[in-house]
Length: 370
Image (cartoon, rainbow, N blue to C red):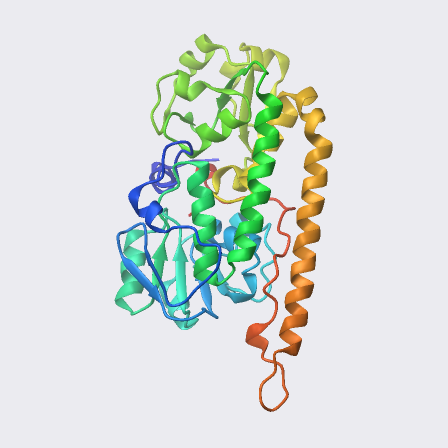
């Protein structure tokens, strides 16, 4: 599968995870309750004001849709990317905002949906953001996620932007507890050298989103050890010399992208390959925890077995909370009536539906949040 430099540039906007949050991210402070009017400074430095609880939200990027669905704001989402990168979401009533190629956002479609607010990940096309703002739409673009803390911060901000702060808090807690279990499980494990093949010889080095995910999962990133910053090509000779114990790539490749020239490495000789969910591994949202889990389960099976039951119980508790919240909100919606006795549909269904199971795929393995 061909991977282009253009994809790299787009995804380079979705980087690392362990650096401190930027000033713009810090400005979007976490709140326990949603209050309006809401005023936030977004990742572009724009002051965004939302006068009242939004009823119509458009999510521009796959990770935006993931965040909104995970916190239970999907009832307010009227438009989202509908394609391989969001196939794990239950997009029934939401209109596809992409063009025929499944990647490019169609500004005319977004405008036609008459959104109260448009939310966009940092990887969104700057020209699109400017175009939507020139058309008098309220657009909030997230700051770049450079740490897990940034992902959580943006998750809370999504709660504020969609009037689903409780759902955001619930999801953030679940994410934190899951990651803590996985990190503690591999804390005493020896991290094996792992080569992450993105296609055409590209790999992720320091300062990338994927590098942190690999580190959390208890493996040593060959790209970083080879001195690569960001995303770049690593020569096959370098990979052979460094002799990785594991190969890792996304499940969107029709076949293994590992070249035959690497068969002489330990990973090649022992057949050690990790195939991860491509969307979960590349989209900065709550479901990165599943991608990390896939790696831990494959590379450190005994350590994973030690926490598997706790993770299962945690997920069950999270799903039960989602269902309870959905039922409570549905009941609240039924009792919220207008003067003529009819229920107000705009007030129903703000639960936290479960989008935890699913798979992915989006052209360009490292360009999945496009």
